Image (cartoon, rainbow, N blue to C red; front, side):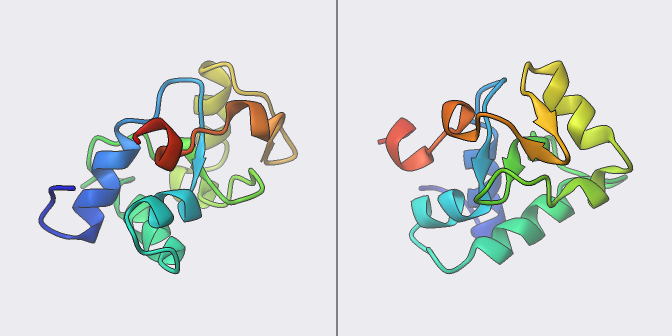
Amino acid sequence: MPGDNFFDRVYEVVRLIPTGRVTSYGAIAAYLGSKSSSRVVGYAMKASVGPNSFPVPAHRVVNRTGLLTGKFHFGSERMEQMLRSEGIDVENNQVQDFDKVFWDPAIELA
């Protein structure tokens, strides 16, 4: 997969997540051939929000159980609001019906 560095490769994958779907840090890391780098995927998502951010839908990346672990970087309730606006049900900071809205890059981009 083309890209100057790991963050660039992460952003390429995240830009492909369809509206109304979510994926996990670990699924992205595994797809990129670095299964143990889910934390680095999280760092890439953190770098993609804020005043000097990159145009990626980072709100669609959650932890392996659907928890909105990146919400603190978006500001109070913004991540949840963004997901809800795409039709994703969120309760108690967790995506509901996670298995139904989960987008696995290893399958979808095969």
